[in-house]
Length: 131
Image (cartoon, rainbow, N blue to C red; front, top):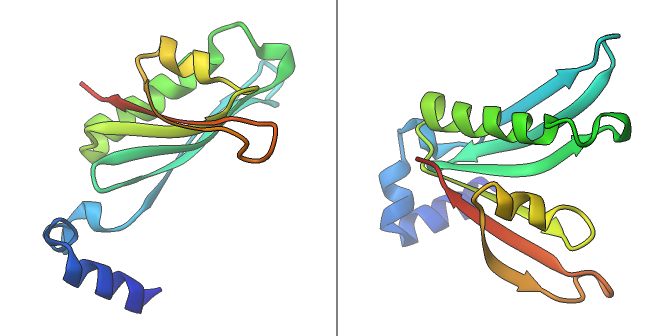
């Protein structure tokens, strides 16, 4: 892993410019929401790297869906990434049966569509500029 990072850094002026900055490494970014009983109502797992927020998982418990928790989780992750970590953009991958419409309503643009990944499912990569 170290050798690959060194090789890539040597080949890219952009990666070289990240050396020694807070954006050089991935930093986890997790946001959780608890319900009135202290149980987990939803969460977002991601990381920041090179001025980007990467949303890996966004989940809301079935009993709490439709109450705005997904939007609240994403808002908090974007705010933290922008104001505390200097991120300028966010990205997410999602499948057709998950939530591409949720992200487009929240200002994300579809950058890539991969049909049959895996077979029978379409994967979307979406991006948003954080302002």
